[in-house]
Image 1 (cartoon, protein in one colour):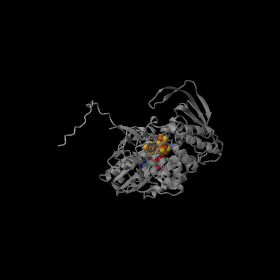
Image 2: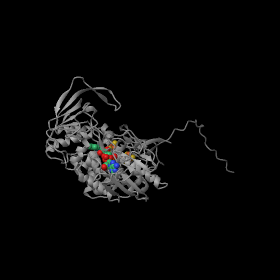
Image 3: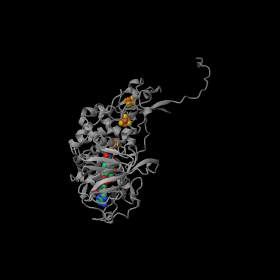
Image 4: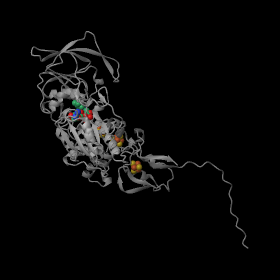
Length: 558
Ligand SMILES: Cc1cc2nc3c(=O)[nH]c(=O)nc-3n(C[C@H](O)[C@H](O)[C@H](O)COP(=O)(O)OP(=O)(O)OC[C@H]3O[C@@H](n4cnc5c(N)ncnc54)[C@H](O)[C@@H]3O)c2cc1C
Ligand code: SF4
Ligand code: SF4
Ligand code: SF4
């Protein structure tokens, strides 16, 4: 009989708590450039498509087209906004913490101009399920954005505009030296090519009533902007030689600029005032902008103010007009003004102007342009719910059932805001009209700040800049475009400056440092997806998370 084998026994183990196990996790995050852009576009995605084109197996042209299609998913006007958007995306870019932000606006223009040169067309959504009839009032950027988003979902869209041409303030306000009309024409034509019908020269509320349109269409969008320029009620303001800023700019943009005379005073501190002053300079006048506060409080983009000053426009701060004095032929001769000083902070969050007693003075003035502000023109539309001057809508733009509004009619803004409001309203109406369709089911992703980016992984470099005509030459070149396009070389180099914050760009650092082979290369990579994870052998060393330069990997406790 074989004796029973004794199992060797060691000392009894001491019971300790089980240490938590950590492992890497891939988490896409929202970069601040995207949060800063009113359109919330996938900026990192389209820049990455170009920057990573070799890894993605794309030719340069294919990468450019794919990038343009990512932009136009939310914004059908990249060439236009690539010229005039004040680019809040750049202000938010993480690269600000290292050297200079990405030149996103210049990159956007490059792709927009590429698409115009190549005559690329906007495409319908694969799941175009529409079939409704929708009416749009206003062919500005907001109405056209709404029309585009519904047409690409398969709906029949008709856009009405009171003017002879589409484009709204982009056509009749922004001057050609900042936005040439053929660029706008090309971007509008692509929307029309999707089957959108334009009915121009029709004012809703006069030529056709809103009730008629409501009966005719399954949904209505009001993108009527703010067409009425405000006038200053001072003595002498009535009569020839005194104009509203937007009227003057509309005349300039239609090559019908009025005679100005030698001295032009422009009243106001916003974009319209700057555009009016720069246009008047191009007509050869001596131009002074009169502003009640100081330059610091001006709502116009700082870059635009710099350009105006460089072109010879004078800025008279802390001064307010009191009276326009006229000559024997009733033409303006001079303006009586009063000095101001800054007082307490007012409702606009800026320090308010307070008159300085006994400080009156005069300036010569042959023409006065009042570019103070605008408000919506609601003639024939007053049945709509409005608060003071502005229409009232909810966050999706809903005014009443299947009636939406967006853009400047809700409050003055920039073109990017008008475009995003048109898109959101279109998504909402589409979801309502096509039962069960919800366009935006995604949950918000976490953000990613500069503290998560390994800035030391790249050399410092300056951002590329759009070339510009020298200020002295611009004024003599009438409406010639001031800023040019960047070169292809500069474009490609600039895309390489992006840190791809919060999204994998395939640098392979994690794979190289992982001795356990946890990172498995995917066969068809795309921005954000180069490796999958197999953590069977993961030793929780955390090295991959440590080396990832863009903050895509997190160390997670399981
Ligand atoms: C001089 C100027 C310079 C600017 N510069 C910049 C800039 O550099 N960058 C920037 O981002 N933004 C700029 N803006 C702001 C930008 O142009 C506007 O925010 C934008 O155009 C608003 O778009 P919208 O579609 O809401 O309205 P709009 O562009 O005003 O378009 C509204 C359209 O509705 C039509 N309409 C109105 N009422 C009716 C009716 N009853 N029936 C039929 N049609 C009607 C109008 O004819 C117009 O075509 C500027 C604005 C101005 C005035
Ligand atoms: S639309 Fe304006 S904010 Fe958005 S990406 Fe373009 S430049 Fe930047
Ligand atoms: S570096 Fe690139 S991804 Fe990061 S914020 Fe700037 S543009 Fe966006
Ligand atoms: S280290 Fe490089 S390849 Fe790895 S997850 Fe981060 S960005 Fe992607």
